[in-house]
Image (cartoon, rainbow, N blue to C red; front, top):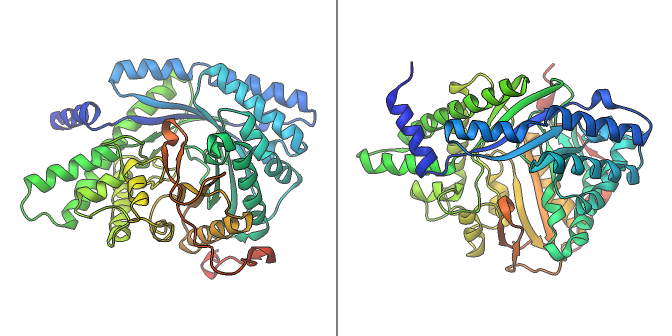
Length: 457
């Protein structure tokens, strides 16, 4: 039954609290495009992507006019290129990335994800070629995003792959030095990557997914902040239990709004509906910040003592509210804490309240991990790999998704400022504790075995 109060509340969220549908992402399988001839493969993937998603942008505009809810980004995710383009070398992988970029430009979409390798237990020829191609591919393309899964709870941590990714990230940043290392901002390293993420840069379409599917990513940190502020003002003696209820109820309304729009887009495109990813993904704008939620609840700033405890509650309440509102919640669905994409988090990093070490601790209870973190340009590839390894261990041991999107900003040192523009935002270069001796841990390579709790068969 439709409740008039819910309608009024949703309209308020749209008009006053920065509610938008952060992304509609069409997932497209490229399994039937496989060929050992590079020109045939490029033609097939271009034709399939443009055919299936040809009306994505116009359909989203139609839904925006109908409901008054902005679809901020229109995106495509595809099968992992490391799998479907396995016969090709690194130069040909770059050609594939440019073909994907051309298709994305033709359709007018914002990003295309799936330049992906799944190497948590080992690497194939295609995986190695793709990883080697990443720096050039992300430098020469505008809309292509890349992800590499290097660890899982079931497989352990592939330290050889992590060592390679440190070098890859460093090269990608250096090739886009004039843009503060922008190519590295389009690359994320995962543990336990889901198959149905609609958010970039980690979006790809898993092998177990449908031939084509529509998924949505709903954001709304400003909505959650406003709901908490209203409850604190209107309710005497509100405690954290009640605050969790407010967050759950708000998350449920966000999820229902997102699923309504997603299902309509799917119906108009003639595709099945996939999932709602209810992730509190911020933008670099005031009143659309996850960090402001921390201040609304009474913390001095994100990163202050108590931040990890509240983040664990926030993440759990968001998931509970989403699971109540829809049977098709997936992706990551929780709270993102990306430094450069969140104005308040960036400010906390600038004033020293939030350090890289505190941020890493908080990733044990959030949706993703070290996200959009700019670090000094002279950070070595081995040190980058070591930071990634720490983050992957958090995900593997806790049976959760974690990720690292690190940007060694060329020529920049701790305290300097980087600017990426758009939703990628801007922020400070965070200090890295290098230690007093050379870090030779990563050079050992091999694979850190899976934890004992992985043996659940």
